[in-house]
Image 1 (cartoon, rainbow over the protein chains, first blue to last red):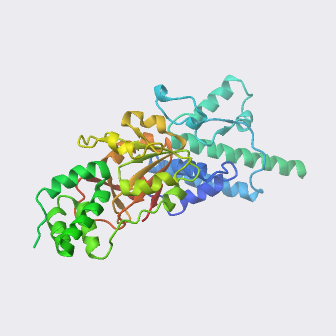
Image 2 (image 1 turned 90 degrees about the vertical axis):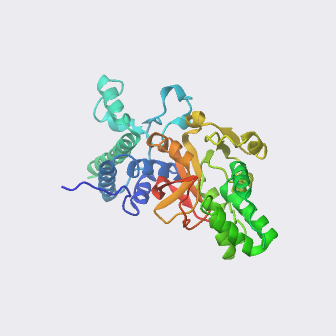
Length: 153
Length: 214
């Protein structure tokens, strides 16, 4: 199968991811930053794969009514600064974090398994970690909606 | 008929180190025109354009009727909306003179020490007291953050390739790109220059998250 060769995403991909993230990132500057890191940075095959997965998850979430209004606690994803240059400011975290409630679906908070999963999701290059955070956010919302549907049925 | 002085090139280079290539070019073209009219501007474009393509470009456009820079900060202000800090790569005083006073509330840094030993940045920064501070490459990371942006002067674009100060290539590596929320190019020349842009570097327009056109 041929590998993707163009570094430029199809027109509008970034805008589509920005729109998808709007419920979690109300500030445009934050949405633009996170969407750029996901679909315009890192290896080309990752950009396209993350775009496709996020868009499909977004379609699934839209089909069940979109994200619920409540936003729970998140674990921050740090900017990839060399440790000796970190100042410890909130500004040194990416605007999007990993929702802890989603991980609690898999392991109790405070358990070694919970910590391990969270670390895996937050680690790696920014395009990886932010795509993880975005997908987990959408998946958590999707699972919440599906549970609401079951309990209402 | 007047001829451009052979000392014009070194003088241009010295002035450009503290004012910027485009800002100095507009200044020189205006003075050359005052001294010898369009004919001397044409001579300057031919004689100096190859060595200093930005000067050649601006002289040629002067002859076509574009008589002054039109620095307007609105596009950059829109692109910086939501940011708290902006680090400027490159130096163009004609544009900074308009932009910096309009950026109240935004902390501004000017990247200094790009290897041009003729530039005296103490003099440059003295013009922007209370508006901007000098930032060395070693301090770059301290300006990063989710509400931080990089702004780079762009010297023309064909839509795919842009001309930028070489410093941009040193600050926009894959690590830095994801440490700044916005990567803004400010195109101060519009269309691409026809001559090879010596003194500058070429890179992809997609380096930037936003390019503000003139």
